Image (cartoon, rainbow, N blue to C red):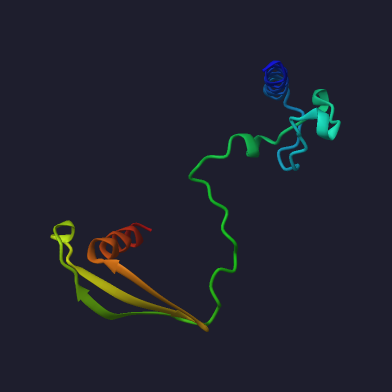
Length: 125
């Protein structure tokens, strides 16, 4: 319990120092370790880049080469089946969709409302 309160005080000190000083580089990698017993780091010289502290949840970093250039993406509804039960009254059909890109093939099963939701999101994009 006492050790936790000391660590919390150290974290607060680091936070206050970072908020009051603006002399750290935004692009540098973080070099803070909050447990000084393991690493031997000095908390007075610690810095955390602004980008790592205040990264917004909507910000995503995607790899540049997701798709294979020059290869089309083929999507085909392979089959559908009617499923029963009271849980699927509005969307009783389960569609099997085949997606091909290069040498990769995916088979997924989705309901109509899921396909429609994806379509609406793609229209907005």
